[in-house]
Image 1 (spheres, rainbow, N blue to C red):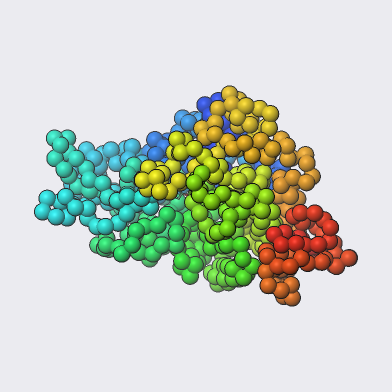
Image 2 (tube, rainbow, N blue to C red):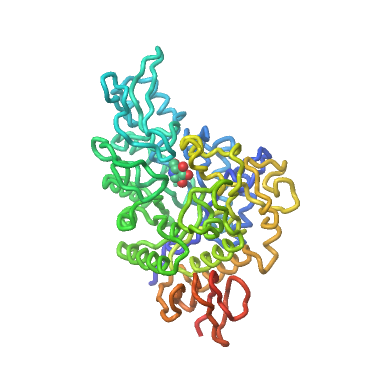
Length: 539
Ligand code: NOJ
């Protein structure tokens, strides 16, 4: 009897950033009823699953990655019942659902942190977080020299009710995101319970936020450099071996449920360490940030594809592919710049992308990605070819990075702009009132979904066709065989009966007269110029 492979080995997973996807309440912030309203759109696009960034109760100091109650939906996003309805409605359309779990830190408004503030040093309430006495004669110096990923110090000192300075607490991110103490059995059992809560509700998996951060090195030693924004940073804050025991226990929790539930790691670690997170008794997938950060260079793509497949094959995990998400410059904008490596947003004062070049490369990169075996992630709006809002006026910025970096980093708001649904509606149809929590750039009008879904030449139609071919030809479950001979600047491979040729930067390629073109970016004229990809049917 042949066994059907687990769905997550081959799935194309669409990332929904709920506050910017679709607003039904009219307040200018997207919500879960808005997501439900567009599930048909996602089914029609042809994805297999959705992953939702956090929608839990939160003061929104980091757009919901600061959770105050892991079991409740924030009023901004609707009611708790909407999360349950969303799972049902998605399942009714054959879509799997992944929720986002944020275990490294809570919000400072979480009941646990409030209790910790009210309790004494050394109390069980404080033990759930990383409280420490300061250094120096009066404890006036932070316990170590760690910095926050968003800029500034990673420690904040409390002040007692009578005004006397008190202990310090660790926050690798914003001051409103205190780090949990994962040495505490209470923390461990609470998170297993949260997993079960949503598994009981029918969720198919979890994306694990900052999966490499939970355990810190013994003694919290000083570091010799600043903590960088989501980079494969090493040091005592990150990627400690102790995290794996946690994921093994979570694996066992999921294994008690039917239906191949899955865990996906957001772990910005060195590529030789990433496979550790997806060993057979740990998580099921990990985001492939080496692919996301790969510059527009054929050799670099070949290297990262080869090494990713080898590393994951070695532990029996599927390789994942991703080009954009809610933390980085959208790939249309990234690939239209001189420096095509990773960025976390650009502002009006930075070098601006060439939007047409960016679009050509972005669609070429996507078509290459969707021909690869494994699982792929699509970030909301990339199917419309959206660029970042690269000239967002500073007054609108909400990402804490902007303030915490003393305005040195513009932050990630540019990739989080509300989606354009209808070209001639106020707010481009994002909300019934025309409100949008961030202004949309003028370029979004022509890219609105209603302009694209019926246009066979649109970016949406390219994604739609590629997803359909990928599914019909079983590319996710296939395997890659490199094709040599196209010369430098070209990435060419075979997966099943599809030949994918991505001309990254080489001279033009004349396709054979009898080539059977399944899909291509740019004109179907038998010539593949640089910055374009083609899929040929193997004859
Ligand atoms: C990674 C998330 O993707 C990002 O948006 C967030 O700011 C940090 N983790 C902190 O939770």
